[in-house]
Length: 439
Image 1 (cartoon, one colour):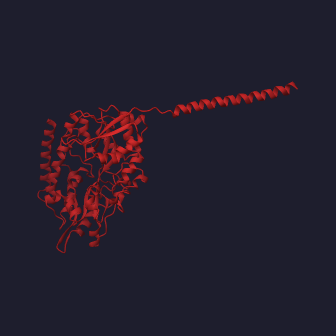
Image 2 (tube, rainbow, N blue to C red; image 1 turned 60 degrees about the horizontal axis):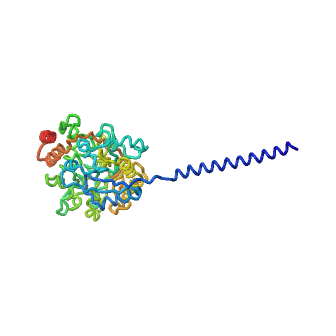
Image 3 (spheres, rainbow, N blue to C red; image 1 turned 120 degrees about the vertical axis):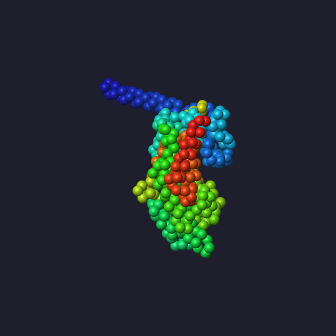
């Protein structure tokens, strides 16, 4: 009898103990969840943004970035500092505080030389930021310029591609260009399209020569970054310029230097040019011309001995400045700009995103009437081919490159031979670099 009572009391004791333990655990869990739910209110922060390149307005900045940053980070007030009208060196010397600096890859070496750069590698590691979600040549290009560091993350890019006027191809019964063509294929098309018809001289192809050199597929540099010597008399430069020259010298497709330096007119304005090799941003920047034109685009054609290698990219980078007092907040904002959310918004507006995710890439231009029905993969070529690697850029590229541009116009026009033109460009570039180094 006593044994049974003891067993019953023991059972009741166990039940009570279990209930007490469960209650305690629940309270502890609730306390932990309560602690987790208590988010610390962040101190209000104003972040100053500056775009070194392009004509950015307050309205455009807020539409693309500012309003989304405010919604994502209520404690952050984004402030755009309007672009300085004078030299950027003077703006930096003025001491104006900038937290996030936007610029293109070509401007990065100068920022490093002006000591406004900040290596974000530790912040990238600390925040477990996934670099693999971004196009990799843009990451590697920054590493090459920053001695292995990452002073900026890419969020967009420009490149060169081949636009074509579908009406002219239809008029003369010539098949449209396709992705994956070689320059020899394009030479054949241009030859068939260069003609005089009804008193109108139709041109087969035109180039933005400067962009063709700057983003060249052979990854040739203007200046050796280690020695600061101009490098304009190489076999690779000869090959790049010779390719343009042979296309311009097709009978009926010839051009003078003034015509070569203004290639947009014939294609977008006069509409007497069948193909145009130009910047990916042209379609948006001159929308008033393109919206009345039956055009499309394909990826930059390949050299026969370098299949699948397209244009170099000119990435846009977002960088934290060395002077910023809000580096953690600035990094959160930059990470957000590279996020799926913002990359999708950029893509849908027709701004080349830097993501490698197909579901975002396939939305390119959806909200922009300019791109309706167009070959979007021409604007984001890393879906089908690989961008040419970018050479290490010297801070003196800006001194040397214009010399190659101006002499290339003369070579392409047939006003001067290749050897003389490149030798003259080299001599002028060396002089310009020395002058820049002495300042």
